Length: 80
Ligand SMILES: [Zn+2]
Image (cartoon, rainbow, N blue to C red):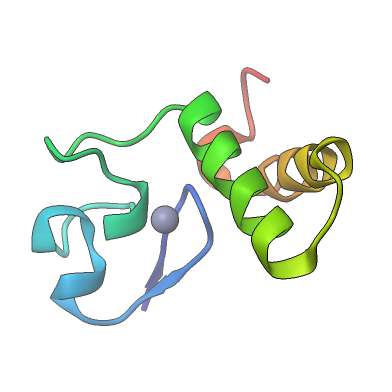
């Protein structure tokens, strides 16, 4: 089973993959409408919003938590 390199989500079915393509290394949630992978900043802002929504944290705290989480994923390990 593959895991999305950008968010860590397990990808089991073709529908979980970007463009429904199991050859892709990232999931449908990390793809732009044209099928390319979202940038660090795009992913960071959606992650931050997700944490605020699910955990009710302050924006600043949620932002730090999102960065922390993303820094462990293969897509973002270098260059940040
Ligand atoms: Zn993903």
